[in-house]
Image (spheres, rainbow, N blue to C red):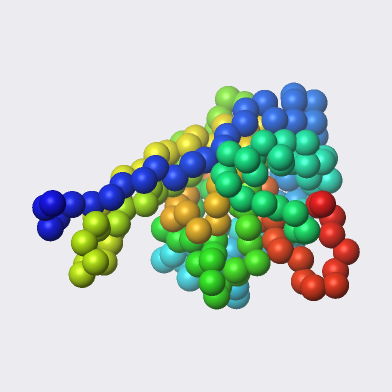
Length: 215
């Protein structure tokens, strides 16, 4: 076996288009545009750090009960496909708004051990005007790339990837340990209604003794 052999394993992403339907997605987009007009703050990394060189967007709390209800309906199939159990979890989510020049560098939503280890499933639901008023903003998910030998660590250059377009009324699910990024958005108008809107969040392991929402 070659000493340079690399094991590459594609990361599974579940994607559903036309998720909420025309009427519900339009109402949710209208609420998102209104929310973007006030109350959002610069997005953070590592919990509370604003680092524009790593992440540039605006985020805030956002209520989307219709989205959570629709996620419940497909959760069993998503769990089966991704090989994860979301029993006894609670959702944690918010609104993220990307406008001209905004992006999010390569990162994980959890390391599975320490950082945010209660996160079991990532979901991202996309909203935008029609026709799409911006360019870019794809979700890039990186495959696993590990050397077969035991004396080397994986190199970033060995990784391949797949881009997922932020199509209106589509949702993606993936494991939070997957390395991913938001590609830079180009939105020449700069208008908030022309932004890339995303409701993103996680199903998180509930604290001991808490009442479970999912079961």
